Length: 475
Ligand code: C2O
Ligand code: CU
Image (cartoon, rainbow, N blue to C red; front, top):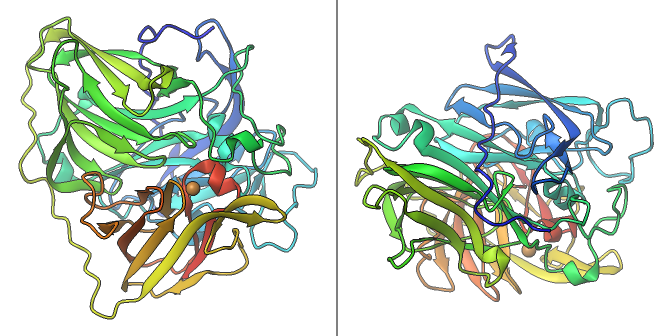
């Protein structure tokens, strides 16, 4: 039985605590990936694959220019790979899909990818994150080749926030009035376990899902920070909400509704790659998997007792509700949203800049139907493009159906959509862009430092697992 919406309190993931400082002065963290039971649906125990045994995992609070080292230990029954989404990370720490961390003490044969480049290690791996990038909402999640979707679905995802002095100097809401919100959908079996329609429930060797879920797996329960349709009590004041679409495949059209009143505006202050130059006011925000929208909402004009419901305009059923805020008290508030937020360098492709076209479409993958880029499935052994560091290029994404395209290493800027100016949701530095069916989107791309091998892919995680990913090399 599904819970009634708006009863379970909104959880806020705990902040990760460093365990020390390494030789270089970087703060050192330890994370143990393990199976644990979590009460997600009241009265039921759901087995989760969790960073530190929790879903979402602990939130990393980091500062620009201050590196952190995270040592991940894998006590799960399957190999894992952790990737910091949005991180400007050297290749060997980025979470290459074949850099497996094998389960502690497991001596079984996980080398199903014969001849493919990767660096499997037993038990533990250390990731060094320079955090040498703008303040932004990043997130970390599993990225194992062929099995990202079931691993994330079962819980392997968490926030990694980068802060900096420039952002701290702004009078934005903070403390309890700043909330990271990880939004996703899940389906549950009768015993309360996650119901994922994977072909290989043991996540051992056969990637992909039952045919009916080819387009991507959807669930009928919306979770925010791991709780079903939660409720959160707020002051009549401004709040900063860091929205993350962590769903495998569901897109959301987020709006805040009040009974009998107009929608509460969502004042967007940031996107995937941090603050916008200036705020943008939206009535609703469309988010594809992987995207983040940083918004400020103002509850101060609402009477105490008002219930503000976050809805998803793209679903008429249960997935049409997301969560609720209940205004419970008046309170002082000296926060505001300045007219100017940050310097955002416009990325300009010079005349004669390299133009690369990538066509995202359904296609054959090893004798089955899968998802391809330029007609080929993910090949970790060969690069689809060698890209000179420091040069601005134009990348053109072409689609058959919806594909949210995500680039590792550096953020980009949207130049045009369907030959027209970018959409209201394309502003600022992006690392994931939602390409709608039969659409052409041009983006300006510039990779800076960190030569090596990286991937870009569709962030519909079923499409990713069914090979819609490509290897690039920065040189
Ligand atoms: Cu959020 Cu390559 O992934
Ligand atoms: Cu896709």
